[in-house]
Image (cartoon, rainbow, N blue to C red; front, side, top):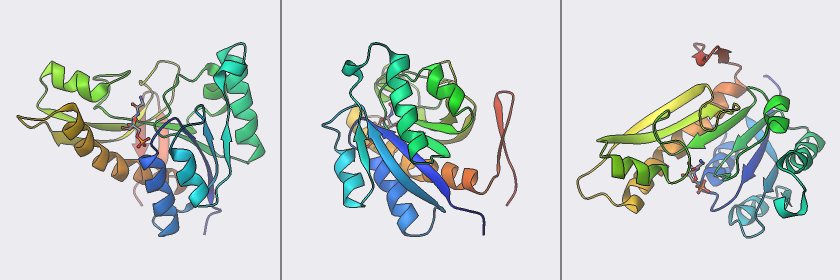
Length: 205
Ligand code: GAR
């Protein structure tokens, strides 16, 4: 068996994607270990979820750093100290700088609640409703310099229903996020993802 993939997760809020990753590690679906969870917000509920699984958590407050680069340098130190191979942005609501992107090129994944390249940025589900699309969804991609635009690993689509609100659409999309994020991580852990230009090739099992 290949050695376990060491994952570090960056979070800012609720942490349901983190919870799903932790559950899938525990139930054996995901051959990996989460060794550290880092948050930019002390109040993130995700921190309690990590602690409940005995995973070390670190809060790094951006306000205490002079620049985003210095702040990301502190995050990088925390990730390296824990031997992290792959970084997951799971509801991490902060743009990452080249400090992290270069150190973890094609080794940092983000989950975004839209079918990218549609609706990057904040409130993706609201943007989808306002635009009137009939299909929405979510994307797991490698993080690159342009926000929400790195090589796409997996996507899942859901229908937009006539009376959807931002909440109901977000909940339908979230169910799919919980499927495709651990799946992308497992593909990575099996060494099956290869970035070729803008594309991610997925090797057969
Ligand atoms: C998820 O919907 C995730 O896709 C989104 O934040 C939510 C976090 O939920 N991320 C972004 O919008 C990033 N641009 P969670 O904290 O329960 O995992």
